[in-house]
Image (cartoon, rainbow, N blue to C red; front, side):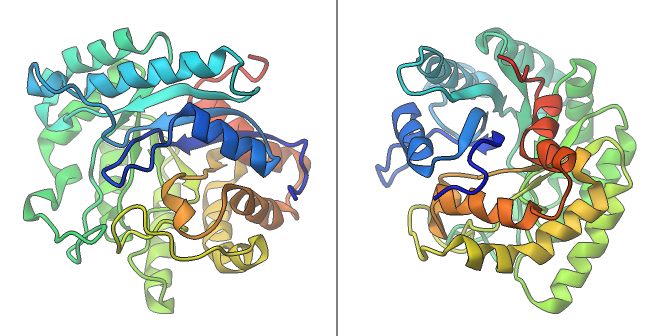
Length: 319
């Protein structure tokens, strides 16, 4: 059963995809999952996941196909035929920021394809020497955020009033801090807490110090979630069905560290579904967040469950 079922939730990190495993997750599947959870999810933000890129045309423009696809999904949701939640209401797409200034026409194409829903970009930057999702590390992926071309491309985002979502591991947070300092006008969103590569006490201390340092950059907000994702195995291999109480106990030290560092006004709970389905159901995930947030004030909870996401992704709470 959902805790605090009337509380408005904007889910700022929900994918649509049809991965190689064949487990389709489009608006009908997402809407059914949300309805079954009983939580009051009013909107979601789609974040890129290499879904439906164009098969041909200029390479740099192929990711625009994802924005075109999500606009169609959002239109399905806006019909009301799949429930009251407005899914894919905002879109975070992808492009190659290493194009530098030449990324501008790609971003313009995303904006044009997004029907007023396109809000920003995420590029694949998460890199670990140990590999990811069962695949070995590609040496070319190391240090992307530190490259001058990346900063040049990100500067175009800032100029266009678009945000940059970043998923990176804790060992990369120094790169992100440097980027935030170099581009103070760029709105940056750290996804998945800056994923710790493991959860040992020694590593947690190093991760927490980096989170505290990043939080000193006022142009950065943080998404509270992603801890259910199993980035050591291939997608689609669920390994647990944890209860909300178990999740809250495991996740509390990480989430509270981030909330203390950033404050509720710069933090937002995220589901990161379907990847986080590897650990628990959608309903249990949001119940865990509500258990952790129980001691915060009403205004603070409103911020973390909907207000911060509404501000960052420019979502009207009455529409």
